[in-house]
Image (tube, rainbow, N blue to C red; front, top):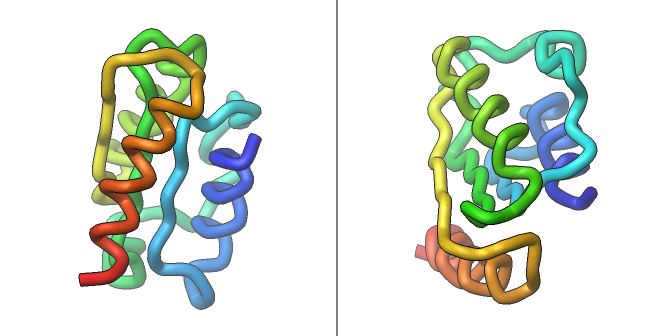
Length: 105
């Protein structure tokens, strides 16, 4: 549930977090609007990067796709990453290497 904690914490405290990465997020709420009430296109002014990654064979792919679609409908820019694989450390390791390279440019 680390991915959902990153999203819930980061997206609801944008004055402290502007680089947010979520990997195979589980435990996301069904009602995104309830848990992310302040998000809008203005959010983009506060974000440097919103990265949401998930393996294409992961059982959490649908909820991650649904969240990304909802964010886009609110005008929030999101970097969408889907890579082959399941809910495994190999998928997260590949994504972390790519995500981290964006943090330290």
